Image (tube, rainbow, N blue to C red; front, side, top):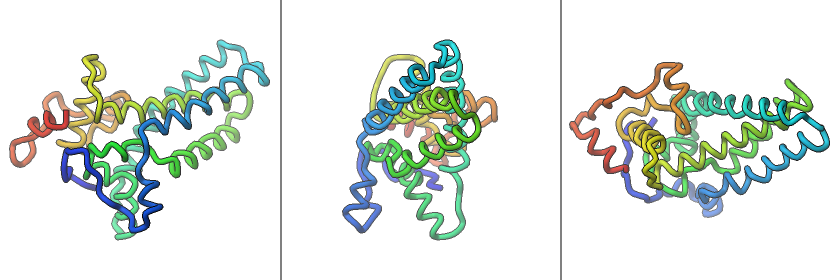
Length: 223
């Protein structure tokens, strides 16, 4: 795992020799919305029209899916994205998936999940729901998951590159900056800090300064 960023500037590093593969590693931040909104609309229409799911039941199940996403986000970030492989091959894969983001956290083209990863994960989640909960619940739960995913990737881009005066947004921005620049082993929640509090991985009120005594100054630079 990359412990300290190489730079806090919006620059990219080349990861692949192939120009084609390299181009696929740079993702426009609107991509999650381009993929997610049609999927969300399809799930809502499917649940409420052909399946005739009551609106109240749909909203409750949708909310359950959205809540489930918050836990999925935490688990993926902590145990998948921050898994530290021992093999050289594993370290290369890890760097490609998430390590590069910690090395170059302000790289605007590598902030959202690539479709090559998000689409298979989405299909796997849909298939698992189909097997476990079946109809009519699957489209409603999946709609909640898709909403959570879009919120996660959109918020992730926003806390790195956008500026709002909203207190909630400022708190998320500060927490995520500290995750990158002070303590990568805490603060795994990006869209919300709920599960960090549940599993006691939240960042302390005042973060530890790095070995040079410049931790807070680095966070300020990221803002």
